[in-house]
Amino acid sequence: MTRGGGAEPSRAGPLFCIAAGIACLGAPLLGVAGTVWGMIRAFQTLGADGDARAPDDLANAISLSLYSTVAGAAVFVLGVALTTIGFTWLSRRNRRAI
Image 1 (tube, rainbow, N blue to C red):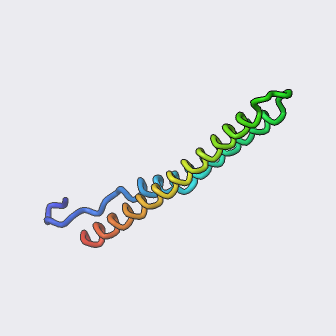
Image 2 (image 1 turned 60 degrees about the vertical axis):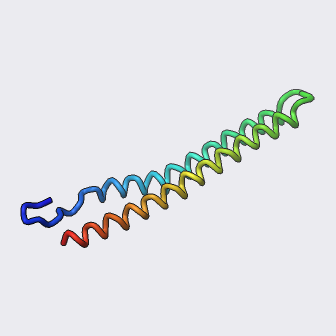
Image 3 (image 1 turned 180 degrees about the vertical axis):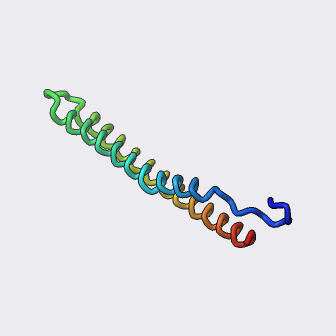
């Protein structure tokens, strides 16, 4: 607050930009990395020498890769929603301060 009673414009804008960048770039890349890792495990299972449990191991590796994809997408959607709410709140607050 300033001495005149008006609100001082917030300096949280750069923090929201960082959070938006993490949500828009970090989460999907994390999901893709997990997907690639799971698919590598799936192909390693396919390449294993004559294991009778290979279909079960292959299904587990594929499900692991899909879980990481869903987790990355969920973090992305949540992060974008929260940063959008934060940007809206911050812009309204700054408009009132002017």
